[in-house]
Length: 219
Length: 75
Image (tube, rainbow over the protein chains, first blue to last red):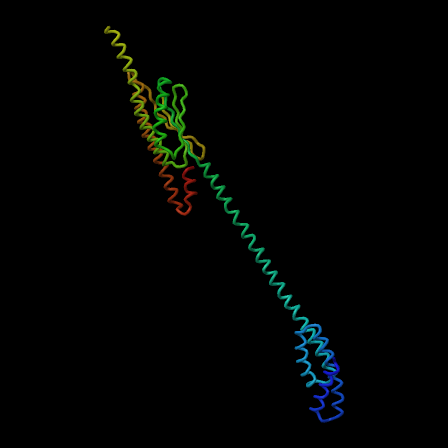
């Protein structure tokens, strides 16, 4: 395989140059170079083109000894370029990884945000305000009547404020719980208005008792 | 007889409103209680009027931070 290509080169050299001595020496050099070019072509196809193009200027410019050194240097350069590209890629990947790592903490920070708002909600719960009114009646019956009447009326009107009615013997206690002082005022005023009406209506049973006693005396 | 009211804010300190409902002479105890209720209503209006004003002032002082303002005024 190698011999035919060598013969072609010799012929071309012989035809171009006129001196016989120079023809002989050049023929030997060109025979050696194809071996190098073929070896480099076997290794990497891309670099073979570079070596072939570079070998020709070296033959024209310098003597016989410089050409192989130049080829080797070029081979080293071509071999370094892939490594350089790999080296350049690794930092890029590293940067991408760093960016991904940087993004992760930001993503992790998002779930932390509801925490303070949850604490705020807990804090809001501790701001409940309480108001209680204690009303003394003459008898337990009057206290219970007032309690039933007031509870049935006010529960229909007020939904925003929590109310609790308690009767202990002759004492009626009403307790309000809310976060808004304005609702306090509205609810308690409504209660006191109703309480005033209930108290005014209680004397009627006493009046009926007196009337019955009066009828007994007449008979 | 005594008609009483008690307010407990977020600071936990109780504030009391008291109205005496003692019947004088032959007066009906329920009439005294009715009068006491009217008086208590006046005290409640005055008390919560002041409280609401403080709440409003707290909101006005910190318009950007309404929540903190309401907390401060409530206390």
